[in-house]
Length: 352
Image 1 (cartoon, rainbow, N blue to C red):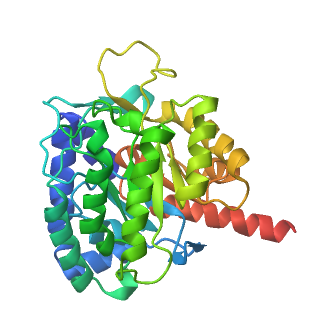
Image 2 (cartoon, one colour):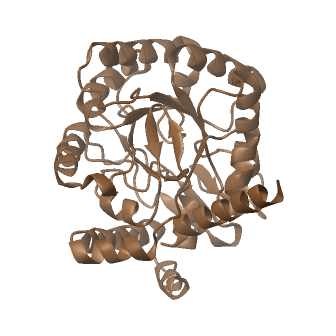
């Protein structure tokens, strides 16, 4: 059924198709009976992971970018994702870059986007999350991460303060926060991955957490999302700093590289989907080698199947995320991957 719907949606501009699909998701999630039926149809088999004092019912999450303004958390939970990352959210509302700003490369199962952190701002998202906490039943809840970034007009030297203020607003309303310092679509943002820029951001956010009384249990992790385009020396630097000051790393964001595409593409922006899989997995493997067996890592980039998720986990991921794969594969995406993971686990156990 989704293949028919996808053919219709793929005739539209990618951002228009996303807006239509998500509008329908929001309408359906508002009908409790429909949401329960969807949850029953797409129920994922339990494959729990314990991390940061949180229980993830399965290791497959939805990456930031799909639900920028925390409008679809109940529906994404019903579709079987084990955790949800909303955002990227900036301190002030932001329109993002001019359209068109999203491009579909169907033959490569990829997307290019240069959205530019279009979102409603931290106060609007905080209000929505407060309402969500009061309305969601405990059995329907999944660990929720909020991804935060800086507004386009915030100078690099003022970035740490901007992240701190966003964390004050959104930290109390999430199970953890992700610092996005790796989007290629905000000028200068990737410079924040350097230790001299990232250290003050982490120190300020950690200090807010230290003084806070909002922790609901667990460790309330502060994570850093990095780019796939870092070289070995940069990866070593960021790994060392994150070991000291962050609670985990998400590897990776979209790439500026066009490697893996069958023909040149002129559009600027970050590439996601299948062409990103190998590079993002290599970064994950390198980080695991640098950080040892116990440091939490989330693998994202090019996951379309249970085999892809297994490859990420084998490379060192504790949890995995997807976005482009969900767009291409449809609403059964999370439940299919989790079934595949569970089946593999059963086969391994039976062979021992």
